[in-house]
Image (cartoon, rainbow, N blue to C red; front, side, top):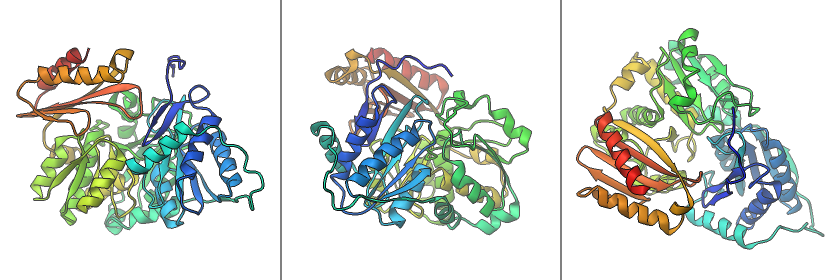
Length: 457
């Protein structure tokens, strides 16, 4: 894969984590300084470290572990591990917190850090703000001379515990009886570690592509239709009942039918919500950029669907407040509190396999039963003109262009009208402005995106 020049790409730091081009904006010193600020906010106890398989991960993990042990912290090193697995380990081992080294869906030249609280979830916005303030105000940490003890490093594999939790949430015996064949692309990230164990426990015949967590991406890692087009024919060729695609840290899932038709990340949460509500009706939480399919399914089951700001931490906060039975984001991130309060591709796969087994249906049939809506996601580079006050002015121009729409400023700008909606917001993880629209037809969505883009420019 070719990569554009990285010299203009700044370090992206927010309350949800840190991300940047390795060797440019993101260096070992920067990572250590960020983790030092994080450690200063933690209670006593060990810190869990994991990584998503990128080539830059081992060196970053070693630098972070070395600093934490010099602070007197014990380190639980999970090696290549899915992001939700880190949440499971933090909670099960009663650790003070966790650090996942991952740039999620970003290209290979990136890496980043995602932080976990002792509850085994990503930091709340308030906790993340404290880390951010410490990172921006503190200089490079000095060696901790005279420390009473150096921390120890323990190597730990949390994959088996994670797989057991997921299998325990579904009708495993029904899945075993169906003897499903599964095709999975782990994208040379960390997802295969739990997936192999889970599929074996569920009696599935699994074909796993990109199973080595070595970061040698064969396609751009975000699981979108364009990035995965070259892999889709392999699903039908394998004779699988379903095709799954994970991002490198395995917190997001995209799905394809047995004949290799990509049904999209937005369908992942909707199909999982249908599975959970059929057995356990209760409140649902999504973020404000998630497809209206999930809200329609919740209404069908007579339960409320609450909306949060974009961001995993915001969804989890709202899930806890609403006592939600399921939640997540339309980027393919399903959060099931029975497993862990982290987006988890494995519970998403297991819930779909359960439906295939117990309903005797197909992925194509399930997808056809979803509410019929058209969504398009676009993005605009965050140019100097759109930084700071410039973006606020641009949002005002967009609001004026959609006269008569209902306006929400919960997160960026969301406009709702009869039969459609539009969301415009700055990304927390990339130097871009995201524009998302959904309506009943391609033409209506294209028109909304074009109008918003023109007004923003």
